[in-house]
Amino acid sequence: MNTIIFLQTLLIIVALTVTFLKDNFRMVIFFSVFSLICSSLYFFYMAPDLALAEVTIGSAIVPLIFIIAISKQRGFVIINDLEKDDDFLSKESEKGIGYKLLSEFAELYKLNLVIEDYEDEDDTIFGVFRVRNVDLFVSKKHGKYLLEGKSTNIIMNKLAQMAKDYPEIDVVFVAEEETDD
Amino acid sequence: MRIDILLSFIVVLIGIYGLCTSKNIIKSVISLNITDAAIVLLFLSIGSSEGGDPPILNGTISSIVDPIPQALMITAIVIGAAITAMALMLSIKLFHYYGSLNWKDIMEKEG
Image 1: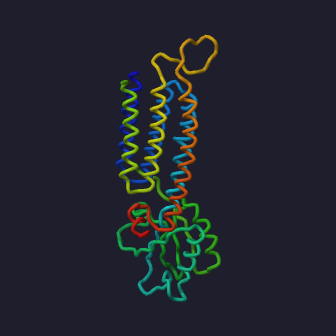
Image 2 (image 1 turned 90 degrees about the horizontal axis):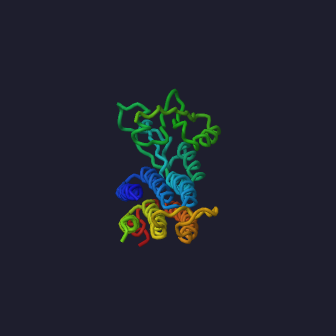
């Protein structure tokens, strides 16, 4: 009985944590923890069949569905590091081939494009990727437009495939460093 | 009143509180899941008795816990997973239509 009361108290703490968190991914991780504690409680209430069902459904399949749904609900952030008068990413002009390619790509995966200008000059590109959660970094080197993206992002392969039609665009994959924490 | 029934009921109330106060759609769905799991827990804690064995009969066990709540609740777990998938699919549609995940923004855009 003492074990059950200890686990119930832990369950209340984790449920309160989930209720007061703001970050979507952390919420999902804590929900997975919640399901694991629930499943051990089912075991101590003499219901091993329910514990088996909960440990597969509640702490593996449902968080997976959540993560897939959350990853479909964010914008595709692009940082623009071109000159001011470069119309590579402009909507209106005829020369905006970059915008044409990226809007085609966004139409394919139903993404929201968010284009921002690059401001912080001290940061390296890795820092930009990690700190601001950027998906694509557009710059110009030696007369060619470089689209730099994370190599862990699966849909970047499709972008590289689509960019083969445009000879002045190069798609570069940047390997992310391992996280410190 | 046994204290473990009370504690399970508190978890149900936490889930309902999250459902009522959250502005984020994802958090609403997670709160729905918490309520679901806590109701399963409440039924099990009502049905269980101290010193009972799992309801697996092999001829030598004398006292078992009540197997009826367990048989009812295993359907509730599966239906909860299905409802979660359905709700998240609807939330993806809502995000692509209104461009937001906040209940208030969506209400304002709806007019």
